Image (cartoon, rainbow, N blue to C red):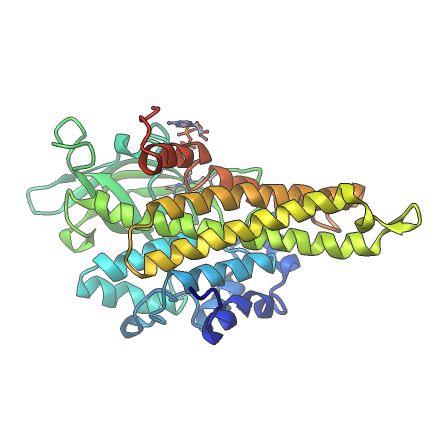
Length: 387
Ligand SMILES: Cc1cc2nc3c(=O)[nH]c(=O)nc-3n(C[C@H](O)[C@H](O)[C@H](O)COP(=O)(O)OP(=O)(O)OC[C@H]3O[C@@H](n4cnc5c(N)ncnc54)[C@H](O)[C@@H]3O)c2cc1C
């Protein structure tokens, strides 16, 4: 077994540190404060070839895998500049098009998206269905001319008002009519400026650069050319996006935890109270040492999940464990780091408390940690379903 990174992987992992020399945490926070997407930073990431990490070279990407996408995200988070768009749009969106798209769809969407000219968002969550995606009510009804009309509503769709295209999860057959509850789903690629599609920003307490939106669909016209995968068989397509999303959360949380701890160690070794650097006090050292251990364990399982994904092996167990372990570890790491800063931890000048919301968010999204534990209990341990 070889745990070392190749030279290329190390370069990808270190990209975040290099990028942060131009687009640093301060730049990220300024955009987060205004909820303004950092176009310049994203454009640089695209120009440097990192938006299309997982897209085949023939369509403008780098043709690399989940491990490289993970390392990219881990490195960005470790530099304090995580980008959710790279998870939702670049990984979930573009990878699905690379795998399930028709040749026309690949030609139409992938090269521009890899070049940063267009962005994708991904619309699953609905106000009433919540975590229970089976209850998706946004429907796409076939019209006599072979097209579809989408009606319904989605909520918390990241980047929806700024992105160019949206992958929308719909039902083309209602749950009552479908043979199995997972039948009857269809994914569509929808132009965010389509007639009948409206987005409204949701004011959120968390400071991140990406806007969150409610989306309403009123007879949005789409055709067979917009179907991603097959009509009524979209659940399988959706499922293929879910493990990558969880794996990436693992990588991002590992990076965020390291970023917080890096800042804390530097401060604790420097700050002298009672004639000694506060880093000498075990009350501060042990929580950081524990958090460091948790973060490295979480990083390991995230890398294992990515490695399995790239080999085409089933990786549901590892993806869920990575998401759970890393989001919990990141919160512990930020908390332990915050304590080192005393009152300064709560100031905007030091910006340590500012790391917490993102780490905490990732315990709830893309799937709350309770459902992650439900999965592990049911599918990994073989225990009865609890809900
Ligand atoms: C900043 C942000 C960005 C987001 N981006 C996107 C996006 O781009 N696209 C998208 O589609 N969605 C997005 N979401 C939505 C997100 O995925 C959901 O909010 C999340 O999955 C939880 O769903 P919910 O809010 O409906 O909570 P609910 O389903 O109402 O659940 C509430 C709580 O109940 C508990 N719970 C629910 N069911 C169970 C159960 N069976 N067992 C135990 N506990 C349970 C959990 O603790 C859960 O947190 C985003 C949300 C936020 C806040």
